[in-house]
Length: 588
Image (cartoon, rainbow, N blue to C red; front, side, top):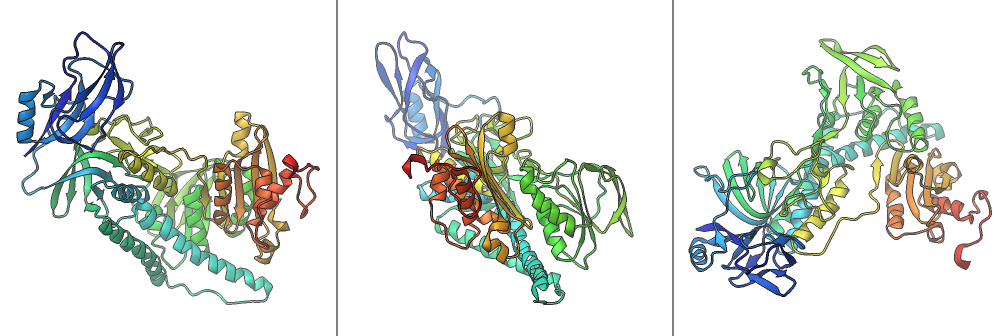
């Protein structure tokens, strides 16, 4: 039987407040009896503090440069009962742990029939960040348990977010392309929509990917527990599932619990009022849809419903769609939405909704004040972190005023053995950010020197046209007093864009006036999301306008608009008149 022992600083003579100059163990690592745990140093000498017993480090109570005195705790060891008894007799430096302020000292006894599981690393949440963390940690030799509340891995993104919405958006794109070709002499007629088969196709894409994740977990020997996890102690979690309960004891944990839709207060409980998850179960026959919220999620789903024949009204409380994105990038999208939607109402709020047998009756206030009726309402007004209801108080993890979990560059929380990644750590709430954070957290937990220091995290609205941006925006630079040089290339001068019939796009690059390096970019146009990664890479490499412009891009492509925008800043463009002549930098 295993038990926990606290290792404390032994008698070190007359010294008080001695510096910890090295921490030689990590949470989850195994130590042998006599193995050095830390090195302390006074003005006269340095000293290694050995472990009194063999075991696994459950938690660390010291850190580098901390000051310790006799009797201060160093770490908690998980040891076999016999070894723990021997250690207690052999050294006064070990004792049973005292009660922690935020959680009971002893874990609750497992419920009758509850399964007990031991793991070096626990990952709570199986979304893109969570499964990436679990898989990376397993590759680095950790024993990993991954707890996921839903029946499938992949989280919101794969199951009810990024992936299914993109499957629907692809169908919407093809419908719109077919309609546009009628202007050029090719007519297909009105599409016939079989919503059951549309939903089946969406679900097929999702299930293909979730089955792949199950195989990867099995191949990596990651134990997947499907159940609702809640922490019951600093190193224990209870996972309730349909067949009972499992208790997981862990050395380290990565929180990857994600986020959920914000609910608007005061709305009636009616199945015709949808969140983004239920909106993916698109139905017919098409009717009238009110989209509350002009952010990425609302506009993407509006794009789908428009293509499928729904009449759409968009209501946004603020003065601009896609708040936070430069106005010149939003303008082409807004123009197209106004052409396709019944109305786009800015600076307008929903005052009330009444559910009746003949529809949902809505009262609007502000710029678009009035009364209207709809068959469906989509509420897409933001997301909130899943940090409540999982027992974070038992871990001692602090939250900020909005419920997010603050972390440092190594993705550690205020508790040494607890990491957090993804949406639960705050904006930007993006799956690709969570994935990269998950890998870093796993590496740090495994003792690898790593940190999350991305200069560029791109964002994409998969609307029609798409909008993509990365780095600083013009508006942000103006507020911060950052001097910029700007290159804006209109897609109306791109042969590829004109051939696609989509000349409304724009590519904008922003360079620091001081360093001449690229610091931001924005694109609007068809498949803009496929182009933004080049700019993100350029930012990470510290490229300037000449670096990008001198990179040979294939012609004719949309990607060469990036090079053309850089050439506008470098003064070397020939496809347009340059703003003013500039000599090649550095003799190039």
